[in-house]
Length: 374
Image (cartoon, rainbow, N blue to C red; front, top):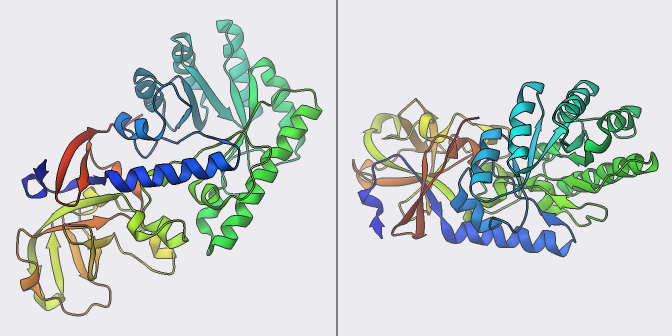
């Protein structure tokens, strides 16, 4: 095991015990509700991480890029849902993956996309399985539940139709767990309603897919749902903690950084982890507690002195007390190691090429590579 002090900073740390705890808790919850878990791998982008959530060959996964589909198919995953509305210029890539044995599904919400998929299926004499995306909460993309457009798209897809999916992204704006529970029920109800609409029109709908980490966490009834997609639950972050979805102690990711200077008259500690290490995500600014660019912990991962990364330049993090009070710089000499909990695990992880995996607070047990790009 290598000491944290042997690392060049900034570095992305992953607490393996917290990761495994988060994975087990969600798996147990969704299984108890009678649905299958289809983990979203867009945050992890690492076969080492995803293999702990669902070993290759034991279940399906969700991806947000075709590069993820390629990488995880190569790692032994066959059942893959590409959960971003398909662009026609990606259908050749989709068809090529399927021809190699990947059971890749896509999603869409328009007549134009459905026609492109049907045309590709005819040209290749092979199905291109598709789920129709449902707008269950007015958050983003999707067909409105009950709209005639749903069966029109289904008719165009024909044998390519595999079901429906939705993402209750509006749950990220909720102010309490009770509000999230309402979104979870709406997400389920609208997806099941649309599946019923397709079946009543004589169309198959074997897949009814829902999912977001907040709604999955607080779901109490998944009757009629076949699968649940969740991603950031693996790591959690300050935004999820602000929603009440997890506790600070559940957050498995942090960025290790070094103190490189001080500005005592301003109450600042300067570190070598700016927004290139943390990302520019300030999602908690709209929550009850603004966490700046991240909560600052000691090298063991314990939050200290109510410190946050109050501002950031490209390679400099400006650490200050939340109340702007003075800091005893002598407690944090140059070279001191600190850890910063991220606002948004997806954005922070995307800044790094590998996870430095902690078995405990004292050192690095292994290094798990991650990839990026499209």
